[in-house]
Length: 291
Image (tube, rainbow, N blue to C red):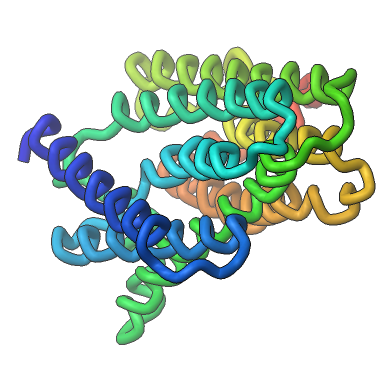
């Protein structure tokens, strides 16, 4: 199947998921809270994408969900909140939309078509054995949806409440958020350029990748941290729980994503061990000197 045909099918899947979510929000019973209404709609949309994944035997249908849903959730919450601080909400939406457009465009650029599936998904299903369908539903679709929803909790606070006046912490959140998007953009661009010219077995340790083995992941986490800052700016008294999403993202990256990527890199490129020995794992900083 060609890339254009594959993208058309993915677009149909997401249009169907959006239609189900909108229908639920318009016609379904309310939970009494737009926060939880949003979660129910989010999970229903996830189930639609899961159905397309199973029908096509390809869980990469879900890949773009990570970046498509946050601006939709944020926009809907804002639209239902006449008491919101519109200036802060607009700043939050600016950061989220820039992030979403960048990440979704990056996915479209790198997506070869539905003949390809993210290499991690078959591994997860194979490990589950006879429960592979459950692993597909839970581990590949529902858990990431909940993860993103947790990351959006401070967005809910920032776009639905009047909160404090817009101030310096909002400015910091904008700078951190847009800076995070720029960091991931540059890191991905450098990796694409390296991949076109690298020699067999060569490991990336140039540009931002000389300062961090995973600068793209650090930038992604910094984006979610910026959203938490927006929530704290709106409601400082809730700071104790507004970072739960950013912490969950950090745990996922450090406990799952990075270990899987590094194990695969070592299997395919033994020279990557030298990068591990020299280059910091996550937070960008100068590489260690080797003797």
